[in-house]
Length: 260
Image (cartoon, rainbow, N blue to C red; front, side, top):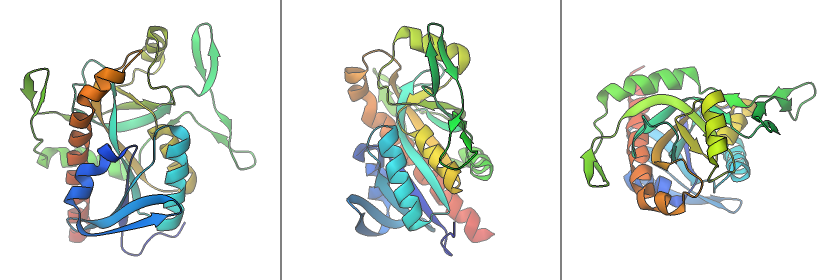
């Protein structure tokens, strides 16, 4: 796929709350619509960006990312947003740079839990995987960018702290809440840090279309059966934390390109 001569970064969030801070920080803003999907163009530092909303779930994530990649031909795609905190090491607002993004419902569900397996892809003799790594250059650049990042403090349950940015494993499916049996099975077989609903599908689209990608997900509520109220309580804190890190990374990316 031919890329833009001038590098352009596509940033996608599942919901408007996940890209609100990013849109506020854009310079040279303009709005548009691709088919029925709105987007905003602008710059973060020296980097040109397009920011859009996918909607929630794997179908929406795949649909919008494929459409936007085909139209804008970005140099890379960044997912910025939130996910439930599967691993106790993740606090609300900690942002995980995904080292691997996994479809945690891809395969065969048995009495002993999931058997993860590849499935047939859209091309002849092609099999698709249940897990996708990020672009290695973006991943290494993100890890280096942590050193120059100064996070804003957050206050959760009367505790104030500065959230971390760290590599980890992200899993996704259309399950908003999961049973304890599912949590136990995922812990045993995948050991994820964050669980959410779009990134694995977006990662698969990027892999298929040859678009470098990276996933940034900030922890919100704990992974649980009924996360509704817990999610609403901390979702904006997590969304803003991920967005602030995304802004820093894109600015860092633009500076690196300008100096090369």
